[in-house]
Image 1: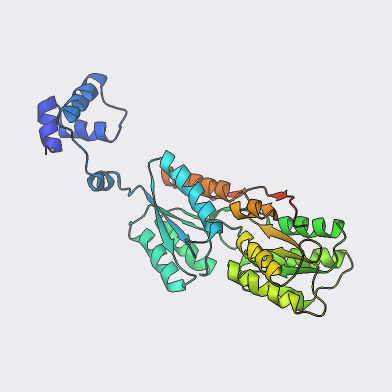
Image 2: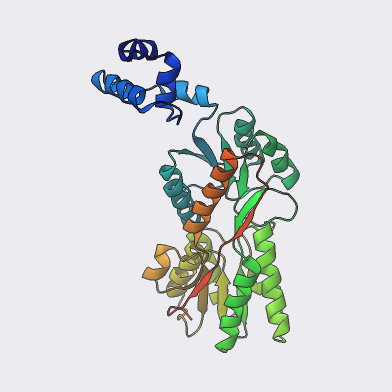
Length: 325
């Protein structure tokens, strides 16, 4: 196989000119560009991507940090990131952490060792200060709102979205409203819980701790919550669940334990995953694919111009009405 020097010799140009043609450099005469391209085609030459990365100082790869690659919530964000990355010739490296801080730290370290050009974080456990310390090595974009750092962020207004969902239940006569939460310590969960408390208090209703169900992430978690509700003397008559997969589990468990939906238990999910349409689950659509697309867009803009300041992009939500309420 020919190399760049041989292509330059056959085309009658310098090695620098060949390199500029391969890297789509604008300052090459059309005559020379055509000669180089002709020789490349004649020799079926394929440039070495690693060599080009070294020349450019770029890997054309972005690291996508996420706790679970198999969860539908993260599938949607992955799809948005990859769709946008493909348009710009970038690869996406999935970095699953299972919320292990050491693994999260190891993936961030890839930025400082130039193994990736930047990082997009879907969810995190490390403190903002530690995340911030890696931003000097390249752009970092997070998929949650933060006032504690100047990192770029794409996010849903979880507080407003949850207020909207709970008010929807109140407007339809539900007063015994429970809440299923994933990680209680995350900033998004805390915002949703404030919305839950404040909206109920504003309606003159109490918040009952036995109607708050933590660690509800997977379908099996939702099934167990349905079992708990079926065994309660004073159960909630409605639930707002932070995730459609968990909400689907509640619906499946409700059938198993004799709870009629929505007559005995109304349910609102969160995310508008494909399963929610199949189950006719009322849900709040965060537009997760758009969050992924915008996250890559912010990364790409800052990879082209590192002097750009951080940006915050709010993605609107939509309440999808179906028959579970």
